[in-house]
Length: 332
Image (cartoon, rainbow, N blue to C red):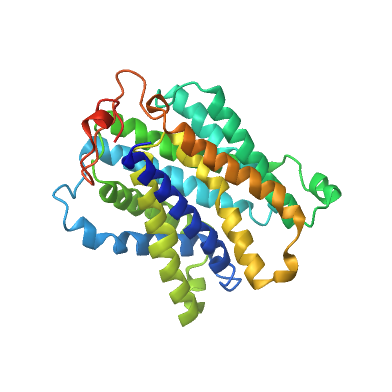
């Protein structure tokens, strides 16, 4: 595996660690605060955190084609976060987990349609392995009660809305890769991240103003502001930036497959804070997820698994000078 691809995998692992830790941080926020407006503020904080890097780039303002793509990317972000918060109190956590593990499969299907993925039964097998592992961790978190798992699954309006949000999240990485292959977007990951956060934040904020009361933000305390700053800088700005960097090297499905990893980080945090939670029931799911990630990295050693179909070469990223052997495959 070349250094550029290895770096992309390490970036996605770092993203998974940040997200896994963020789940614990989110749990520290007080109930009753407007979630959509808080998300819009997180996007704003993430965008502001990227301003020092933006000032060092010559291509700050997007063209019309790029602005249209960023608008769609922002809509994808708004759709996912809006659906997640709307469905959070209407469907079970298990239903959300089952639907969320479909994102890499959806990214694979969209990628085939946009011709940024190669048909691969091996990749589908890896995604299925990771999905089973993620579901296994969810089962362990529920206490290993099969009856509760079965009773928590059903299809209704909440599940439909959240699945639509998952479609938006899957489309985000695919559209980014597709637009990059046509050189519509900036070569710099920081520029792509900044504008997608700005437009996504505006759309989520507009939805929040419709669904929530602005006065709810008046209840913010200093601890809430500090948590919001952490989440905005790291789990929003940082993770989207890492995703944009790695997503130009890895295919959308391969990058999305790392969404199976954050629950392992949350599981380890749980073991540290609540040692009595340690049990053998966590082992099968964790092993399957780790195995899926390892197989994914091994698969990336094959240049065909990372290159685009003919005629869809991706623009090299200015973040590093890629070796000529990498550029010849159309991989950044």
